[in-house]
Amino acid sequence: MKQEIQITDDKYLFEILNKSEFEREDVVYLLKLTNEKHISELFKKADLIRKEFCGDEVHLRGIIEFSNFCEQDCVYCGLRKSNNLLERYRMSVDEIIETAKKIYSAGIKTVVLQSGEDSHYTKEDITHIIKSIKEFCDVAITLSLGERSFDEYDEWKSAGADRYLLKHETANEKIYSALHSKQELEERLIHLKYLKSIGFQAGSGNIIGLPGQTIEDIADDILLCKELDCDMCSFSPFIPSPETPLKNISPADLKLTLNTMAVGRIVLKNVHIPSTTALSTLTPEGRKLGLTVGANVIMPNFTPDKYKDKYRIYANKKTYDPIKFVEEIKQMIHSMGRKVSEDKGHSLKQN
Image (cartoon, rainbow, N blue to C red):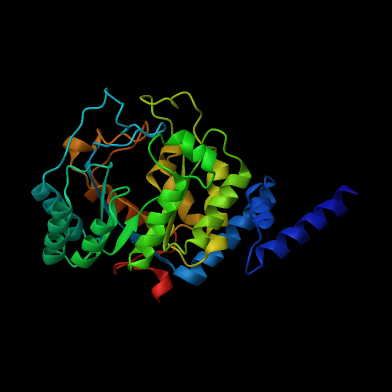
């Protein structure tokens, strides 16, 4: 009898993995897989889908975390406004531009400008930064600045910004409200839809392992990314920060995180998925594992050393020399039979 059930399970898994469109119950089923053989099949399928829709190229995106000031008070984040233990910093406009030049000199074709929600940098400041980087560097620019005004989005798109990353974090409204005292999920989705409507390549994604989160919630996260027609999707694990109300919550489960990335690839197909820094915080092999389950992007951190330790969204964030790290990452990518992309890695939906 046990063997018959196993055969039936294998057949059911095969049928789901070979669907072209997925119902919510299919996504939940795949996320709940615990049998090692079945998880192996899930990962193999995710890697095949990655190869079919993304090829073997891995895109490197250089991040500049230019400010750890934040006007929001999200309970999971070490940058939250109420964290009086964090030494704050802001990079100057010239520092940001010079760091972008270093990213370009390292052969990386995307610059990611990331900060807390910090209105100290005006619309004109960001516009100047975008135009200056584009003048000196043949790169794509991704902005990750939180919710800003539609007028700002319009100007930054016109100035030459290519992408905007704004994670929805959770599709569960109750959990979202518990995390954010000043923001609403509905408003975030309005912003994401607007960014898409004016031509930004838009990125979203979730946090895995939030308090109260269910497998069904994670399934909804993946399906929401599909509904939003995202160009980039980040599925990253929750890592507690000691300077937040969630400091005693356990980190996300590694297996569930990898399952989520794999299912995300299978369902969403032609999106860019990063193997995140947070994943490498869960395990030293995190970035490599991410690339085996559907990821095709790695984001080296070029934030200057004097600031890097202060951008503490979560604890135990690894720091490294970016130039040395890029060379190590390239070697790892080549050892996996993959190759480092030499282009800007624009949306796969535009091909």
